[in-house]
Structures are given as C-alpha cells and as structure tokens.
Image 1 (cartoon, rainbow, N blue to C red):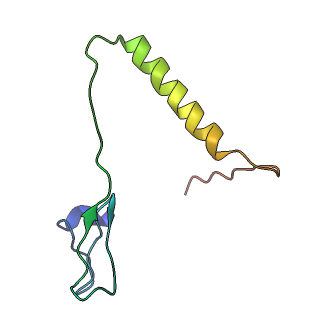
Image 2: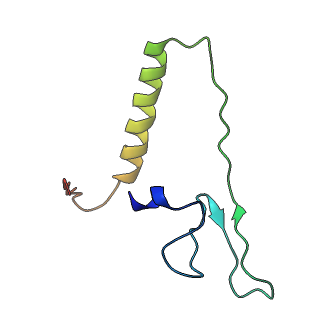
Length: 83
C-alpha cells in the first residue's frame, strides 16, 4: 500500500506519526508521549519438531483462539468481504 512509500513513523501529514505495534504511551504527562513496548514475542524454535507436528500445533492454536472469541450468549455471525 501507500505506506511502502513512507519511512517508519512518517505519514502524509505534518507532525502526525505512525504509532509502533505492541506499544503504549501515556498522554497528558509533563513530557511528550513516548512509545514504550508492552510485550515482546518470545520465539523459541523447536528444530526437532516435524512439519506435521508444526501444522497440527498451529491448527490447534488457531482453533482455540477462534473458539475463545466466539463465546457468546447470543448467536454469533461473521460477515466477510472481498474489498
């Protein structure tokens, strides 16, 4: 998209900057807002894992994440759009 033309933290507008992912800032403090990371990915690859094990693990995690978000006391629906 258009952001490929821009360097990190820049936008088309003067004095409006992109906010980094996984960051938080306190606004209203005496000093200007400063983005601080609130989490960091802990990636520890398991080189002994087979491709089938990796695929099954990914499938289980995605299924669990979706199931957690679909818990409701009313019917749940999804609308998908191609654009």
